[in-house]
Length: 265
Image (cartoon, rainbow, N blue to C red; front, side, top):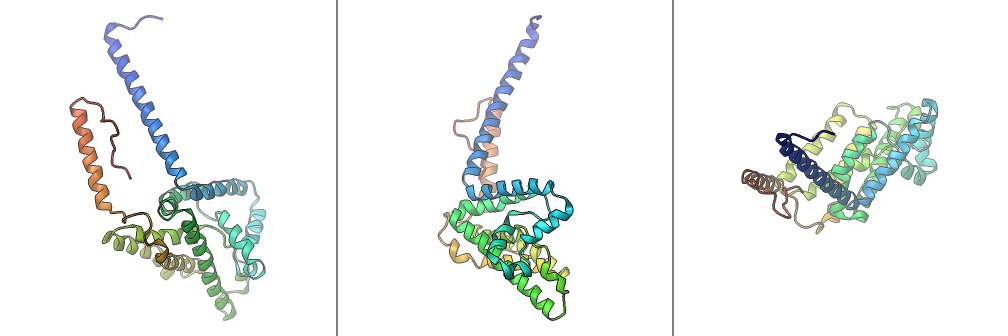
């Protein structure tokens, strides 16, 4: 192998330095991601279970899948025969959407709620909302069937998924945010879940909006949890200050100071 010309040696050292820095950065990211997952074990165990059931669904024929999910559905028929089984089983299957999209939503909302409230309280909020919203929406559907506003076949409708629990957790996180930003967040939640109820008016839309109301009703469970509310303005200011410090160190040609925090939460 021919030796590198003298002019190329500094480039080689620079590339090696970049490679080492990149490896250190990726290692630091891996440590942070692992720490985040360990801080919300319930969220990621649930997400892992959804991954397994989603893979299983991909190996089912459409006819078998529909019948399989209907037996685990929280519809009127199944709730009247074996409510405990279907209330639990329905929370481990995804009907619509992709697993990856739920992985993002679980990391943004469920994981934050579990880190804030603790695993036991978070699970109570999520499963309690799932149960309450299911009975509210299916009770409304039963009333519609009995009064001729919905066909009798609706008692066997397909109703599985984790969206009611997610909506409840999204709502309860309102209390994690400092005022006045709390009210802006709450307004956004009400619009996102209220608009489909006005335009679509399906029992699922009712279930989602009911989940938000149930999630807000968990306020007593949140009192005194997780320290002071999160203030977005403080995060923006600390991130901007960290960015300014980093730029100053780079202009001075110095490495980042030991324990340097880029301002992430």
